[in-house]
Amino acid sequence: MYLYMKRKRYFLAESEIPTRWYNVLADMPVKPMPMLDPVSGVPVTVDTLSTLFCRECSSQELNQTDRWIEIPEEVREKYAYYRSTPLVRAYGLEEALGTPARIYFKNESVSPIGSHKLNSALAQAYYCRQEGVTNITTETGAGQWGAALSYAAKVFGLECAVYQVKISYEQKPYRRSVMHVFGSLVTPSPSMSTRAGKDILTRTPNHQGSLGTAISEAVELARMTPRCRYTLGSVMNHVTLHQTVIGLEAEKQMEMTGDYPDVVIGCFGGGSNFGGISFPFLRHVFAGERNTRFIAAEPASCPKLTKGKFAYDYGDEAGYTPLLPMFTLGHDFQPSNIHAGGLRYHGAGTLVSQLLKDGYIEAMDIDQVETFEAGCLFARTEGIIPAPESCHAIAAAVREARKCKEEGTPKVILFNLSGHGLMDMSAYDQFLAGNVVNHGI
Ligand SMILES: *Cc1c(COP(=O)(O)O)cnc(C)c1O
Image (cartoon, rainbow, N blue to C red; front, side, top):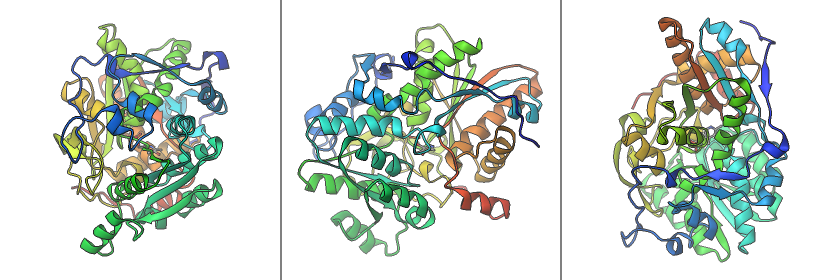
C-alpha cells in the first residue's frame, strides 16, 4: 500500500461559491409530519421554537415554501476563509481497490476546526448576534460541534457554554482544549449544574453521558438564562439547510470533472453532513432528471435508520426538545462506546427519516472494525487521516467500489469526508494494537 501521488483536486473561484442554501423541504413530495411541543403536544410554531433557538433558525426550520435561502453576506465572508473545499478524485483508493469505479470525495476536513460543522456554526452564531443574543449554549459529543461553535462564537463576539458528553470529555481531551482556546466554558455531562443532570445522576450514578443528556442540560441552561439561545449541530432542518453548501459546491465541481455521481454517500449521526452533500443532488431526482442513489452510512452499534422504528420521539434524554417524527432507537437508548462519538445519537433528523420512508435514500450499517480498516486504507492511499465518523462513509464507498469490481460496472461514487482524525489518534492506536472491537445492539 502506498501514497498515490496522482491526486486531482477541483476548486471553485470565490465568485462561484454558493450564495444560497438549498431548502429540500420546499421540494419534498411528502412533507414530514409536524414537530410537536413536548409539553402541550401541539405542533410547534416559529414563536414557540424561538424561545429555544434564535428566530431566524426557527423560521428556517419550518419553512416549506422557499426553495433557496440567501446566505448572509457576513457568513459568506467567513465561509470564504476556507471555502470552497476541494473535491478530490481518489485515484489512490481506486488503484488499491482495483475497481473500475471512479471515486470522488468532498474534503470538509480543511475547515479551520477540521470538520463540516463550521458551516452551520457560523450561520447560527451570526443570526444570534443579529438578534441581540449574547450567550449561546450547546451540547457536543466527540467535541467537533463544540469546537466549531466555540470558533464561531469568537468570530461573532458571543459567550459560549458547551456541555460535553462525559466519556468524550475524558477520552478526547484535545477537543476540550480547542474549545478552551476559543474561550468557551466546557462542562462534562451529566453534571450537577442543571436539574436535568442531577436527575440523571440520581437515577444512574456514574452515567457516562450521551448526546441526549448533554442536550437536556444545554436546553435547560438556555431556557433559564436571559438573552441566551440554544444551538444544535445536527438533526434539525435548519442545520442541514446550512450544510447544503457542501453539495451545491460539489455539484459545480463534479461538472468540472465531466462525471456525474451515480451514488452519493455520507456518514450518518443526525443527518447534517449526509443531507448537506445529498440534497442538492436529490433535487434532480425529484425533478425526474436523474436516478442517483443516496447512502447514509451509520454504525452497527447505533443503527436507527436500519433497525430503528419510525415514531415520534424526543431529541434528548429528558424530553425537553420538541417531539420529532423520526427513525429512532428510543430517546433512552445508550449506544456502545464506539470511537465515532459524533454518530452515537439515538435518532435521525425528520427530513432524512421521511426521505428514507419514501424510498428516496438508502441506509447501510457498518461494524466498527470495518470502518477503521477502510479509514487506514484511505489514509495510506490518499494521505489524509479521516475522522472515525468519516470512516463510515469511506467504508460504504469501499463496499460500493468492490461491488463495481465484481459486476464490472464503472460507476461514479461521491462521498463526503466530513472531518479529519488528527485528534482521534488514540482511537487509531487502539485499532492498530488490535483493541478495537465490534458492538452490535
Ligand atoms: C458530527 C460529525 C458527524 C455526524 O453528524 P451529522 O450531523 O450526521 O453529519 C460526522 N462526521 C464528523 C466529522 C462530525 O464531526
